[in-house]
Image (cartoon, rainbow, N blue to C red; front, side, top):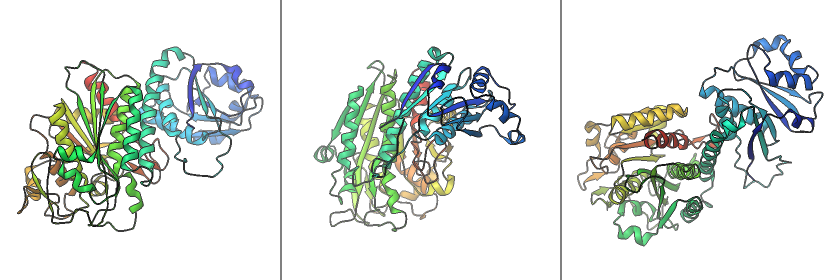
Length: 491
């Protein structure tokens, strides 16, 4: 059951009977604000005694000090967040996330009154209040299922709170999809969950294999033909602006499990390939955010859903397939499958929707992890202005991106002697991420601003992300939502 988040005016009387945890902000200089003074009085001087201890001088911005079983009130603890009023976005969100981690699911009242970046603290807290435990039969204990934020100008903060709830819902939706095991999130189940987005005003169409074949999408179908799960394509349309305005197209790779196909991956770490549909997950989460906040923009999300399995019907290395565009592709390695899925979906989106711009997202290459680690997604683009807008949106949302090169010098590596192109570079692993992007660019029309985000390193975190526990991070939803807001809703 999801936690309920509410925003109300500051009300100290709630503490008289509240038995959960209480969050209070405190300046690094130790000066108590109005709320701090009231909490200090209710707890018989507990905060003041803390400030007088030498250890307090060692506290840094963002640290949390816990006062268990405070006197004077029935609360389980007081969690004191050391946070300067001039802290930046990342510091405030990180502090909120740290507070959420400390609170767990025990319920809390968090005083953020008079804090000028309260929305960032709240967002960080709400993003981190996430757990993927639906398949665990362990007793999870008593849950309060509610966190109350208090602000002295709650009515002014409420519009931001509504937007925060929309973003949190979209990010958590993406995490749920990416964390779901492949025996449950089959291509059919994935499509069904996307169909549920129609409840929020999104027009959803599911294309089955016979329809995909009729469209000539031989590259996408080649990836999934070795699996018993049928390949699908899902189109999601959000129309929040005038019909005449061309939409932004978001394209997602949705490989629900990737064995590598006949070019079988090694067993070590293969269980993590449930997250190879991360690009489609980000697209789905973004579409949900846009619908929940009723974005005044036209956006279409198109995802290709397949499973890459070895079998007697699977595509073989050396096979030649034909894409929807009409180009032929020599398959040198069946583990370079994501670019095949994207090539057809990219072409379809352009043919049908003639988008104003287009972004594809995919956990595409291990090479991008070698290059950038887990701190940044790889950003490739054919348009400087569009690339700059994406970078600015990512920076504003504290989600890292790094511009990577595109060049005809790399493009030559995917030439084939038997087909129009090959799905792998001739230089082996060298520049693998760049070569994959060059492959995708062959399916982008020259007049379409396009960006490719290789999110292989940022989609999943074993240790946990800035605002997420271990597992799926939901990276990209906030960036794309911000991009739509800044690029399309300010016109």
